[in-house]
Length: 259
Image (cartoon, rainbow, N blue to C red; front, side):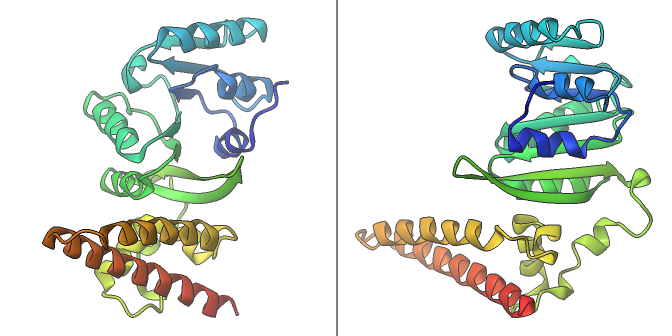
C-alpha cells in the first residue's frame, strides 16, 4: 500500500467508507489509489487538467493494478464528472478562491448532483471556502489544522445539510456568542469564517502559532508602509492595525478560556 503524506492522510481519513470518490486536481492520483488499496472506496475518479500529471496518474493507477476501479480523466475542475457519479469530492492544494470557483462552476453545471460529502484543503483563503459551503447547503463536520514540512494546512470536512447529523447546523456553528472578544457580532462571525468554527471552539493546538505568524506578516507590511507619505498608505496601515488587534484579542480570549 502506498504511504501518504500527513496532509493527504488527513484528507483520506475524512472520506466516508464505501463512498465513490472523485479527486479533483489529483496530480499523481496518490489519494485515489490509497483509498482503493485501503478498502475505503469501491471506485474513484482522478481528475487532472494538465497532460503531464494526468499521465503520471494513469501510470500510478496501472502500477497499482487498479485501472478497472480508478479512472483518470483530463478536464477542468468538476468538468471531469457526470452528475451522480460520485458521493465524495476531494480537492486539495490550491487557493480558497479558486476552490470555491471550481465548486460553484460545477454546482451550476449540475456536477454536484448526488455529492453528499466534500473534503477540502485550501492553501489560503479558507474563509472563502467556508462561506461557499454555508451558502450552498453544506455543513462542516470537522476541521483539522496540521503542520507538515514547515507549512500549516487546514482540512475541512463537510456534508450536505440533509446528511449532517442532528444538531450540527451552520446556524449553531457560526454562532459567535462563545467568543468573549469585545467585537461586534458581525465581526466575531467573520473571525469564525477566517479562523474556523471548530478550530476556535476546540482551541486547536496550532491555532495560536498560525495566527502569530499571520500577525508577523501584517506587522512587516505595516513597517514598509511607514516609509510612505501617501494618505492611502496611512489608511491601509490603520486597517491592518485593526486586524492585528482583532487577532490578538481573539487569541487572548482563547488562552483565557483554556486556563
